[in-house]
Image (tube, rainbow, N blue to C red; front, side, top):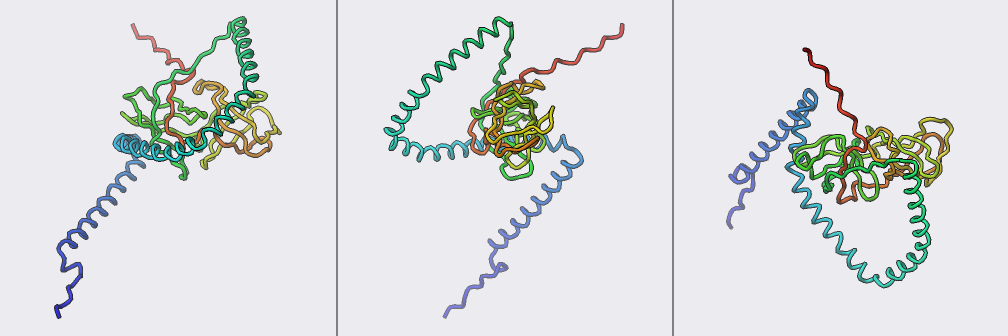
Amino acid sequence: MAPARDRRTGFSRRRQYGLFLGYVLAIAGAVVGAVLLVASTFNPPLFSGLRMTAAGVTAPVSAVFASIGSAAAEVPRFVNGWVFAHAENEALKRELTRARPLLMRARTIAYDNRRLRTLLAIRDRSAQPVVTARLVSSSASSGRRFAVLNAGRFDGVLPGMPVRASDGLVGRVTEAGPNAARVLLLSDADSIVPVRRTRDGLPAIAAGRADGTVDIRSVNATNVRFNAGDVFVTSGIGGLYAPGLPVAQVIAGGADTVVARTFAHPDSLDFAVVERAFMPLPPPPSLPTAP
């Protein structure tokens, strides 16, 4: 009978090389992590540059995987739409019949609004879009809430620009690299947005809770009652966000401070629009030169 082959690592040169390579990679990872920790503590600008460089390298790869995931998710939706197309068509026809009077009323109100604004010489200012980019990643469970866009300074994206989606406001750009940008989401603890209630114009503040929701806080009165379902939009105060952008809806009623759910959900968004600040601050006055 042939003797059993000894399978210990010491008798296999390939396994020895593999074990050595594993040790080398583990030590290199620990060293890189220690360097990044020291840089983030003692030199935040350097760490920010390294982070945006890494984001610029990984953003195209993440965009490819996001595109593949979106295409795969569309397959069952397409099948369901094809199977139930007839029923959905009938439902849409009934909905259109019910909505036609409301549409005519809205057009009348819009016409009256334009006419009154012309009479009062009120000028509207619309936010200017900079670029439409893909949200390649977002933090959904950490204490900080950020997202990464696959567009950066090469596309005109700069820190401080607001970011919105079709559902509502997403947040604002905090860091911008050559081809990637970091977005502070509404639900982050450092996010504060001036808002107003749609039904009566009540001013309030939407402050992030770092758990996917925001707090709605009254700003100029006490014992203010909020009802479940109250909708809040941007007020335009501060000049960063254009007024009227959907922000959040109150989950449960309360007084002074209540929890609200944001309309835009970054973890389910494919694309977002980066806009210029609604009313950018004027540049500081130049100092007179000495004769």
